[in-house]
Amino acid sequence: MKNMLRIISNWRQPLLALTLLVLSGYVSPQAATAQEYVWTGAGSAGTNNWNDPGNWLYDIFAPPVSDESYMAFGWFPTTNTVVTGRPQGQMQRLYFAGYGNYTLDLGDGLTLLDAGGSNGGSIRSEGGTNEIRSIGAIGQQYGSIVALGGMIVLHPHLTNATSTRPELNFYAAEGAVIQVLNGSEGAIRVDGVYPTSGTVIYGGVSHCRDVMLASGTLIVNGTFLLTPTDDIYNPNFTIYKGYVSSGGGILAGTGTIQDIGRFDIPELATLRPGDPATNNGIGTLTFTNASSYLDFKSDSTLEIRLDNRAASSVVWPARVNIHVLNAYGNAARLALVQNDGTRLVNGTYTLLTYQQRDDNGSFDATYNGGPLPKGLSVEYGPHALVLKVARPPDATVIQIR
Figure (tube, rainbow, N blue to C red):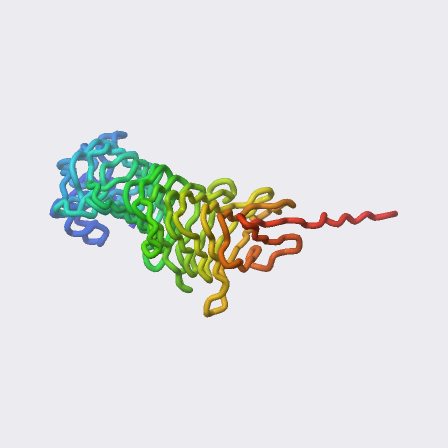
């Protein structure tokens, strides 16, 4: 495929190029009806402007921005391409085929909507590192960002076209990453792409009606401002339980989640403070103004990363409930993970703070997947779970000659 694209990219016969792509199955036939537009970058050297007709496969006119069209990038091999211009109006989808890396800086006049402007609208990537520096709304009331491979980086504060119950849906396959740098408005839904799941990273300030983590990893490094609720049956942050074949959702990060209601860590799901990409994975995930309790279900996991002189931690301002055993004999787990090449020095490390611990429940603690080594102990205080390290000094052998 790459060899064919290299040949096609040197042709200035767009109809022939389009025919080859359609026959090969890489571009859908609807492109011939002026609905799908393919970027070639063959226009004026060095400009990469959206409005230059030479940059599009048809080489006749710049693509109209309408709800009957969507744009495909990455069919023609490139390295790092920055596409500029200020298209105005609405279209269905931005698509990245995975050949090369693209950055779109298109202003805020472009809205992604399904045909007819009814709803939807999406960004989809098969690979590469693709950045959206500026864009308008994604969807009328809900929009979708899908990463089947590579990475999508979203710079703007994300919104829908209407303020009535807005919602953003993120789908990431295994190994794929979606990064939101400056937060969003509305409900957040995070899931994988069956049968695998990837990672969504959130920075900035987000005003969230509620959050649902169905599968994959959600790393919250910014601030989530949830809509307050005291309804324990309809919480404003939900993690789905996992299955033996796929595992559950993983909530991680170093940010703050405010006004949270009842919060369950269900079976095979994980609460993992810290971001693996920063500070050796050591960090604190903070919850504020909780209206109910944090409930670790049986077979759930609190995973704590350890370094030489620090441990990750969770701050919870209300009650904590830790379930001991389920029908299969599995308790909630405290998984201590020591970073490679490090050794935690003697001292006391706070892992989880809380207002109180209900029913004296306790975790089944492990260290790198095995039992706690000599000198390490887990203790439950009135307001905190701590790890105490009191290893004896290493023995020194003195030879007498």
